[in-house]
Image 1 (cartoon, rainbow, N blue to C red):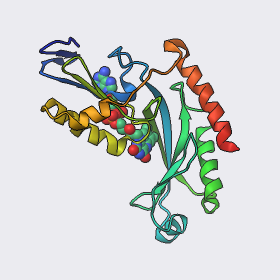
Image 2: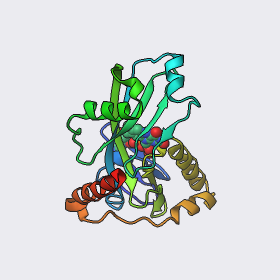
Image 3: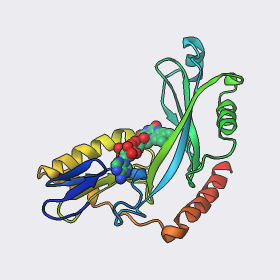
Image 4: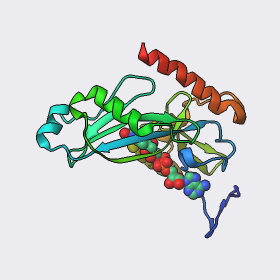
Length: 214
Ligand SMILES: Cc1cc2nc3c(=O)[nH]c(=O)nc-3n(C[C@H](O)[C@H](O)[C@H](O)COP(=O)(O)OP(=O)(O)OC[C@H]3O[C@@H](n4cnc5c(N)ncnc54)[C@H](O)[C@@H]3O)c2cc1C
């Protein structure tokens, strides 16, 4: 990517010249924009989905059909799907490697919370990378005149990423009110530089995990 009045973005498939660039690679961005590297950390997060439970059993688990997350620092979250499965999310990895015994750990946690699900079938499991910021607030901003970025929703991107897209579109169209509010949020780099960032975050999270257990 070459910045300037008419930035140029080159991909394997071709090249685009444009008036403004939006960088929204989030946890997958790597070192593409060095100024952004270190402002977010990639953390892998996982979800399991039970077999369909049927209306009665599903309603007995979450009678109000709420989407729930617990109050822990490394939190778990769960809800019922439209086809009445329990979706249970939690567990993290900072290394890019899947945690050992992931299936069992997730099943154990789910069954500890919902003993009625002991022995239930798990039909699906999936995971992906979430971008987190040091202060857990989304990181929207601009580098130079026309390189915009939005990232680091810290696990809450389903609604916020769409909102961020609208806000960046407004800014590119010349309306900066909402953009300026978000861009004013102070974001710091994770400590430790390229080498120690991940181990330090893992260490800090271990501390908070222990505190969660107390
Ligand atoms: C298991 C899991 C559960 C989650 N649960 C929730 C939840 O319950 N509620 C909630 O609000 N959020 C949740 N999230 C977080 C939410 O999914 C993200 O915050 C949201 O997807 C971020 O959207 P995004 O468009 O910024 O980034 P992403 O969805 O990560 O998209 C970034 C895209 O950029 C692409 N990309 C990166 N670099 C490049 C490059 N150099 N060239 C080309 N393409 C590139 C990537 O391939 C990717 O497609 C969850 C995430 C995971 C993984």
